[in-house]
Length: 459
Ligand code: AVJ
Ligand code: FE
Image (cartoon, rainbow, N blue to C red; front, side):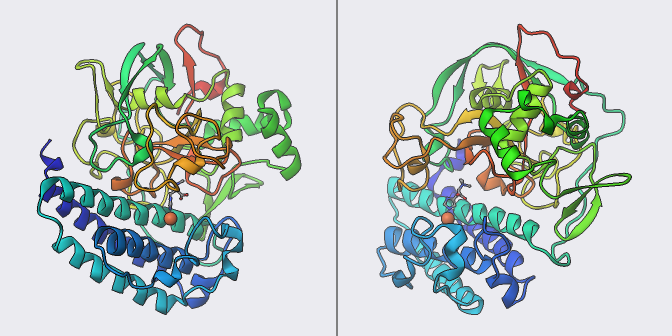
């Protein structure tokens, strides 16, 4: 694979760092000082914290660890350590004011580029340092998506703008579900230059045949579940999900409001009718799980999702993306904050997977049935706090202090950068969380009969 040549790793890392920074600045330059220091939700950090945390990780990993330099502000490490202070308590930290945070991240970046220019000349060391540069670019993009979620939670007039996503091509008629044939496939990766520790190693997994929704479940289908009394029926819910519904009074996805003539939603400061043909967004794992049970189906496992997204039955190989090895372009998937919402279900015919499923990458993160756990032979790299501390205590390869309370999400959203999105990429969150850009699709074993609920129609 030519893209794994060391020089091109470094060039790609540089381009990725620059793209991430342009996006970061776009997310902060549209707000004033008060908008950057306020906490818009206890679930999120003030945006000024994310900004300087991005710089602090770069200070640590690129200047100090990769570059062997003293770093710009090692004294700030405790302020920007995500594990020392939970998000809800971050407003109380002695944070840099926004103007100083901007100067800090710019100074760190200037030095990081010097480190990259003087990168080691031998191929192996360069590849390793390019990995750390790529990891830091992905880290910044992950925080950019988090900051985008903070923008969505923020009250006040719209400050972000983007063109609408593409529609569904004329004449499209898709089956509601596609068959993924049974048999082994390669899950995870050994050689993807961007893969983070939890995506490794490649291993064979035997996945029995199953049916998968062709597209993510739409807002319209989800509204049928609501109108059918879905939130009033304990039998559809996981017991913990039902307790959560009772405690919090959930009635609909986050940001939805029922009006006399239908549903509206708030989206980045605008109120608009819920687009019924688009994937449902801002639902928790519990809601996804309940919908699936109501529809006579279930969430796909993580292995099922990955097989649908990358297994090519013609070659027996696993692809990097559903459509093949080419980097995601605007014709393949709704990624990178190019648009500020998911595209209608059935869009992106050129992004179709071999099994015929669409929109596996981009649009909405998809909740899976699986708990976040290590693959066989997992090794934390380069630091335990990226993945390992989130694995359940007692799982093979896991450290102490993990929580069993994380579900895996796959595929990325309209807010995920393409460098932080591939068919092996694993995201995770608590099953109650809804501020992330998450939806889902449903599945059923191949030897079951299709349910007749209206919800089984993917579109
Ligand atoms: C992989 C999205 C769950 O945001 O907590 C950012 C990414 N890790 N900084 C998170 C991350 C450290 C992580 N997720
Ligand atoms: Fe972080």
